[in-house]
Amino acid sequence: MIEYNRNSYMKKINLNKFLTACLFGFSLTAGLTACTFEDDDYFEESAALRVEHAAQKVQDILTSSPNGWVMQYFCGSSVDNFEGFNLFARFDKSGKVTIAGNHRYLRDGNANKYTESESIYNMLQEDGLVLAFNTWNDVLTPFSDPVDPTAAPKSLVKDGAGMGGDYNFVVMSYNDEEIILRGERHGGEVRLVKCDRTWQEYIDATNELKNAITNTSINSYYVIADNDTLYFSNLRNGVTQYTENLTNYVKLDYLSNCFTPWGFRFEHQDSIGSHAFHEFKLAEDKSCLLNEDGSVKVIAYWDSYVVNHTAVWKMDESKYTAELKTILGQIDSALKTVNSAYSLEGVGLGKSSGSNSVIGLVISFYTNTAKTKTNNIGMEMMSSRLSYGQISITKDADPKTDKNFDSLAARSADLKPLVNSLASQIVGTYMMTPNDFFLPTEVLFEPVNGGFPFQLNSK
Image 1: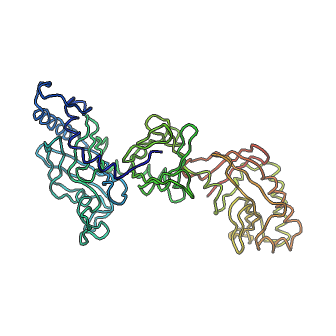
Image 2: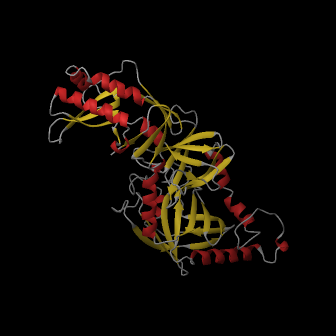
Image 3: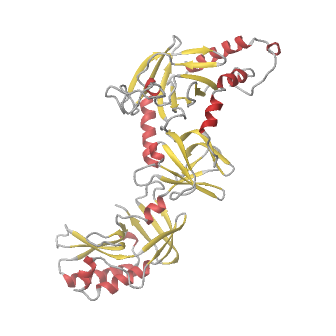
């Protein structure tokens, strides 16, 4: 994983104008290339004329997109970390720009509400090209306003950095589909990508994808390349933590990201082992996200979520084996010896209810003949992840039981031996296959060593 030195990075940013002037020397149409120190006479046009023509070319590109541009906006790295923001921009040849967004720093009661604002832009010809948004814009300017964003607009930040955003951007590279910008003051990256749909459609598709791959239950991920495995966490929050493990880590990097209709993109490129990544897109089979060349996988920590659950996941009755049906029928009869109104409702794995609850095998039963009221009893079992998608389920010779279990077992001598027998059959090593690799509601357990095949449902 690349060590990220923020102070060094900011020093590099201060060279942007010089580097940009060099970069424009080679190409005006395909984008900027390496710096050169040749005399102006080497070129057919003077440096000033080349910049002027480049400025016109960039403005032509900006005004050529019918649906405008998605502006993947990142604040500068000299201040506290902020997530990436999806803004939208439409440029016209008169110098007006309409910028839209629904971010949480919109003011005047518009936070998180879709808002459009019109202002002025210019293509400045300084040492290189600078795209300048030099009048106030309700959507864009709050990022560069020198105030505390949590108390705006009343409380100034001492160093005037505000959120570390910029409104003047050095043009780093461009082509007909993408323009890369760098903030002139704070160095945050802004990427303009031609929008392929209406802005609201883009917002809706992005939210749908974000909710499909992140949620409040699963927000940690394996990052896998070759034999290396690292971890992302808090991806949903837009400031992802990148560590060598999820607890007691030695090194921690913060990577700001924004979501797209296909996945997510980080502000800066990073790496795992020898493999670089910048942007991830959902794989065709929706089992993971892949970086640009497919060498790095991001896989949700779904298997740990299933193994360490506290809610009860119930076994799917349609997949009961004949032997399981026999034992469950005997457990049903044992419950009826306690109370004729009792009947078996189902069996699952999770945390039993009531006092001194245990995590393990949970037997749910109806407590009235109308089958409208339920209760459960629990016997402790242990589940542990062996490798990705593989778990081991074990139990002690004399496992703990909750008070509900003890109370019923005192009135039915057959109940505890039967549940113990059922638990013993579940013991084994399993490969798990989910119905959804980011938030499973069904997981198939295929025995590798011991046990029997079954499916757990979370609903």
